[in-house]
Image (tube, rainbow, N blue to C red; front, top):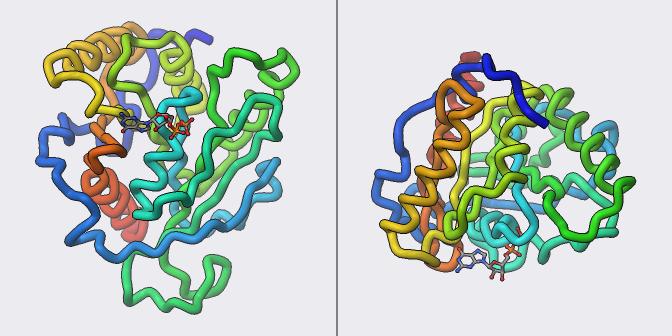
Length: 249
Ligand code: GDP
């Protein structure tokens, strides 16, 4: 699924240089000490999803990329996101309601007036070895529908394994995001697995591939769920976007 060469030059509302250059020592302390995350539900169709009243951040990647672990890292909970969905299982959009401030009234739920927060959406992944054509088509329809029609979608985080060479499935999905014209960012996972120099090489190789179809690179983040790296940077980015949305920018 190749994207046109003249693709959108700026894949994100705030394409900025290397955010991962910031220290990533945060293990859940400080600014994001308070984060209340609750599972909202799993939905098989866009029509079933909660009302699009809050900023929304979707996470997607190849199977085994470390998505569940990252959702758990962000939420500060050990087993919020379940282990990977196996092929053949119903493909669902998993919604989590996130409140970042203790001032946000506890009793107010996402669908009530005055609710302040955002949705984290765990999207069904791609790249399973044993997936039938029918399953693949159903996945594509669900994801395309969600990406194009979900008006409250603020950013899609594309998870990429930092310990392996560029994967065609990830590059194809980046093109798919371009076709759908949604803001996106790359989240490199498992950064504890290989030495920094090797990881840099993998990232450069991935970026070089991206630049074959994109005029500019999206923002990127480096994370390790094992070492609890990158949580602070990702949450700060989300908070920043939420602030802009609240101000109408
Ligand atoms: P998902 O299929 O994308 O949801 O991936 P999971 O979160 O289930 O993780 C897949 C595998 O990668 C599991 O064996 C995890 O323990 C491992 N894994 C996930 N994140 C990390 C990480 O940051 N570092 C390392 N070394 N392994 C990880």
